[in-house]
Image (cartoon, protein in one colour):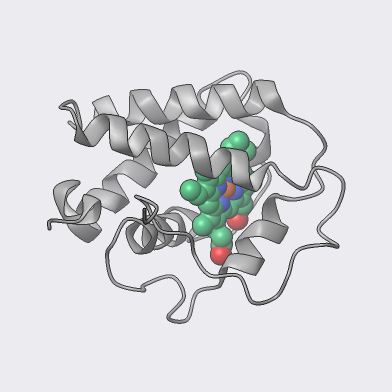
Amino acid sequence: MTTLYEQAGGAEGMLALSHAWHARCLADPVAAHPFEHPGHPEHVERLAAYWGEALGGPPAYTDGMGDEAHVSRMHAGEGEHAELDRACIACFDVAMTDVGLTTDPLRTELHDYFVWSTGRLSAHPGSADRIADDLTVPRWPQPG
Ligand code: HEM
């Protein structure tokens, strides 16, 4: 079976989508602020590696960049932010169009992955204290 990673253009496709999402967030009045502070200089590349791994590509993220506990903790403790989540999801949909991911079922699969992940990463609004060390990068589609 061809993975979503391959269908979306492999490493190059992930990088293009990550760039497009980041640019769309920065241009959005609601989604911009988390990304305006100076962050990791290779944020876009790291995000692309993570998405690729989650969508069936090689373990480019966990092979030296980080792990799921790190990603979960990075997004935890920010309080409730449903409006921000909706804005980031809308930016993701526009970013897919920007990079030519316009056909179904691929587009819907990627959208569903992003919505699901946003929900998971918003699950610890209070603090990162209860996030375990041994989490694995969740794959999409989920088995079963
Ligand atoms: C409401 C939506 C989201 C917001 C506001 C958000 C915000 C952020 C911020 C501020 C960073 C740090 C950027 C930097 O270092 O410059 C980050 C990093 C990251 N985010 Fe998100 N994020 C969101 C959704 C997601 C989703 C849905 C995923 C995965 C499917 C994800 C995966 C990651 C990864 C892998 C990193 C990089 C970790 C590293 O540097 O090792 N994020 N995010």
